[in-house]
Amino acid sequence: MTTLRRRSLLTAGAALCAPALPRAQGQARLLVIGGGFGGASAASFACRSYPWLDVTLVEPQPRLITCPYGNLVIAGERRIEEITHGYDGLRARGVRVVQDWAEDVDPVARRVRLRGGDALPYDRLILSPGIAIRFGAIDGYDEAASGTMPHAWIAGDGAQMLLLRRQLEAMPDGGVVGLAIPANPFRCPPGPYERISMIAHYLKRHKPRSKILALDAKDSFSKQALFQDGWTALYPGMIEWVPLAGDGRVVRVDVREGVLETEFGTRHRVDVGNVIPPQSAARIATAAGLTDRTGWVTVDTRTFEARAAPGVHVIGDANIPGPMPKSGFVANSTAKQAVASAAALLRGEAAPEGVYFNTCYSHVGAEFGISVVNIFRPSADGTGIVEVPNSGGVSPRGNLPEQRRLEAGHADDWYRSITADMFR
Image (cartoon, rainbow, N blue to C red; front, top):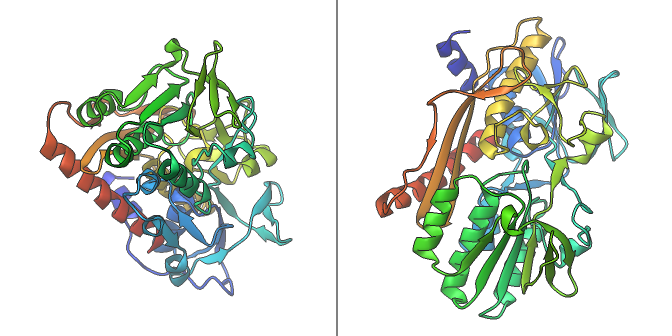
């Protein structure tokens, strides 16, 4: 497929799907599980590009509260309503939206069992279930503990996000906010550091004597130099980042005492604790036997078809395709490749050549944005992902206030654009 044809395929216009009910003769059934960045992008793109597909989206939440821009909600820079999106736009396109939990996948019978009792057949399945928090991976941190020390890493109904915000508001000036940050891989690699930045932004305005203690289970992180430059410029003396080599890995929490304990027994007392635990693919991926010993789903990186289940394409944060980050932009980009591959395979054709894009903006302050851009391709045998040489990069370093202001605006434009692509 030529570059021009591929671009045309991935940006096809707004033709409606064939009516979802009743299913027209000859329509193939594309079932999408999960209505986040991957799943909503897949359903929308399938309708725009393949009107001969009968598209059903299964999502338990009536609306999506996005993790991107959630850190700005925590900092009081956005209202939660501004990052909440409904599925009416997809319904208007012809997507059948089923509000229920998908409980299990039978890849032999090609059916998905729902919690409500229905079983939905499919010809091809796009599985975009997101992540599961590995409760118990940190001693003392279970689901009950997250009601005291929120993770706020799965948006869900927004409760965790808003809990952390209320705790910051209630904390006395001079208090300590402690974060526990996991080792790779996890959802949104720059996310904890944007969160540190936006919490610092809130504290600087409202509780300037307060401190942030970031305990990290690794020695380096995404866009590290840019974040740390921003912390020095905007929040001098407020943020202490402790890497793995400095005893930064949290292994135990005591929510009653408000203590984060690290690997070598150091106990840090905090006023507000934000524990971001290790993660894995969501429960349905494990229940269906799709995950490997890492807890993630291994896929053919040319089509995103699960190695363990032909006909099931796993996209978004649940898979582990090499160096590509678990970002919203990657979920959107790979959703389109998975749908295009599913459509081609349903017609007995070869899947199109894959090119995957990542653009990730982070806010360090209200008008201080930074970014990273990458382009990836699958390896020839579909077992890995390679970054295209000289294809990306990060924001330049230095005292560049206008650059930072513009990038903060570009981040806002990116969010509006990608959510429009997903939901309209």
